[in-house]
Amino acid sequence: MKRFFLIIVLLLASVNQLIANDLKDFEIEGVSIGQSLLDYATKEEINSIQAGFDYKTDKFRTYRFEKIRDLNQYDKLNVSVKTGDKNFKIVGIAGIYYYKNLDECNSLKKEIQSYVKKEFKINDSDITKFPSSMDKTGKSIIYGIQNYLKPYPSLESININCYDFTKESLMKANLKVSVNTHEFMDFIINN
Image (cartoon, rainbow, N blue to C red; front, side, top):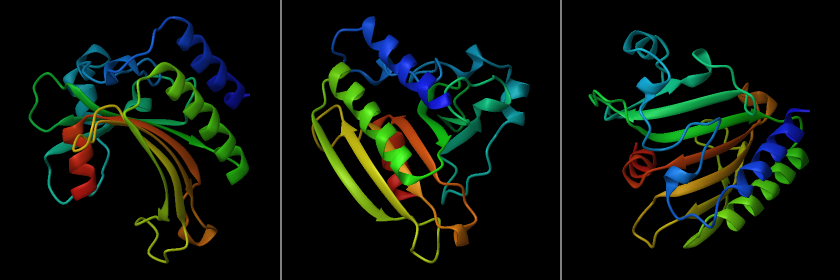
């Protein structure tokens, strides 16, 4: 049922737009790049929902949005902001949906990619397959599509990834749809 709802919401969202070329036009659970996290929570609430991601540096912080608002499409929603930004301007959003099997995830990934290609002016796309660094055995694989809205060297992107974790990794397999500014994506790649 959640999958059906996710598809319907994506399709309805497409009715109101012409072809877009700005990350701000892509919403996940009603949240988009450039908005302030303060539009959804107080500073005290925001400080209480910080995720404990282990980055090499503390240039950005990620917050668990589902702890302050109920989600309709995804199981989790991570939003990221630059550390020290008093306005808590959102630079990265990631919706996470736990799937039952890889076929389900690949089907959802294909449908979401179709929506992205229809609604956004994509400069370039990469289809990727690589071992997850989160699983030290190297057996968990990420199957992804990265959609770049601007020419290289810009990393500004809409990403759709199936994280196919093994049982031994003790992590849940998930579909992750994310939208990231160039600066935040560069940080993720290098940290």
